Image 1 (cartoon, one colour):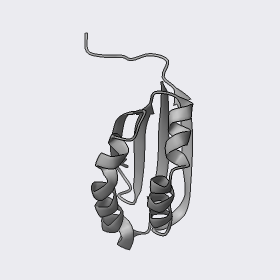
Image 2: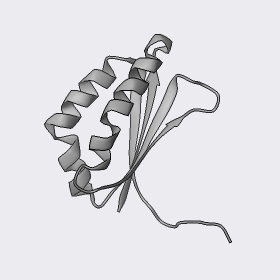
Image 3: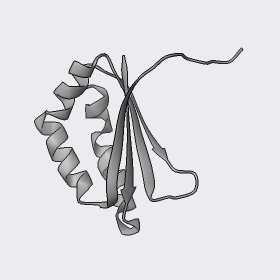
Image 4: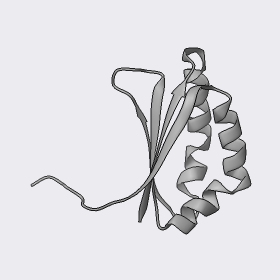
Length: 100
């Protein structure tokens, strides 16, 4: 299992456009082969900063998505809305901490 976290900083006037794009495409991302989970987070103090948090069966599944035509189209539309360069991390989940 691999976790992908992407931080994106949008121009203020483009936040609603990003939210609409995400809403339109989230189901297709969630059902992409190998995707086990997808969330969209918004920074608690800066409403222009968003994060996607996704879980993938393997790095190969993530890369299959990242090199797909669907991703390329989605990413090109998303990049046009940025205020700053995005950051991305691929991490391995080491532990799950739940309620007692």
